[in-house]
Image 1 (cartoon, helix red, strand yellow):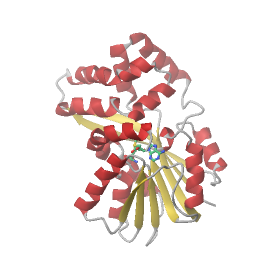
Image 2 (cartoon, helix red, strand yellow):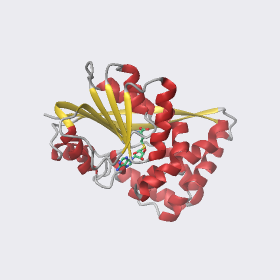
Image 3 (cartoon, helix red, strand yellow):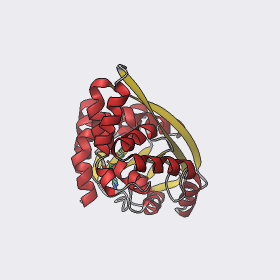
Length: 280
Ligand SMILES: C[S@@+](CC[C@H](N)C(=O)[O-])C[C@H]1O[C@@H](n2cnc3c(N)ncnc32)[C@H](O)[C@@H]1O
């Protein structure tokens, strides 16, 4: 569809290996916080391999769920999971752009975007589209990464490849707590929700550990360092293009350092904002 969706296509398998530990805990948290009634119509935007859609289907078997993503490789993986779990009567999938939703006005009771908005070229446009397709009184729930997105490990990666840049990152983190103009900043989140026509959002800051076994360190470094998501975040933090390409290599060094002490598992803590708003 686009150059960016091609990058997500290439990365889909690596992403899908980790999503149950990396994003599913937050998708579950989002579902805990929204009220979903009988026979609800739900849209999962930027579904990836379907963390939110699959969990919503398991919890709300009378609902009907549409899951969309612009990466056809992600949708192929999700289709396989839907088949394996026998959820074909509840979830349908579609390749599509989150910023131009191909649905009529007032179609859904609930729309979710789990770790998608911050990646869009125009997140506000996506929110406006969601507002259009949500029924009056419907609920939007979305997540964005918080201040500690495996932060110490990313510091370790940078330390391995560019110590001076690592120090700059510490200074950045100390002086840009929830940098204005990013989906980690609560004032920014509030402003975008209100501008898209929603009521004032509730923002919950939550945190989960991801368990990584020593035998999985290369797979984790590839997932975390090799994807379009981390590169996007690193550019927003001012990393050089060259360093952002080498982050997987730096992560491998940092993870080796972590496992040097002989532990079998490490627990890497991330945090996220879970945002709920109503179409009033
Ligand atoms: C970090 S993944 C999140 C996937 C899933 N929601 C989860 O929580 O595991 C981001 C997803 O957003 C999708 N995406 C990014 N921009 C998009 C757009 N404009 N339209 C549709 N999908 C998009 C990517 O293809 C990718 O699958």
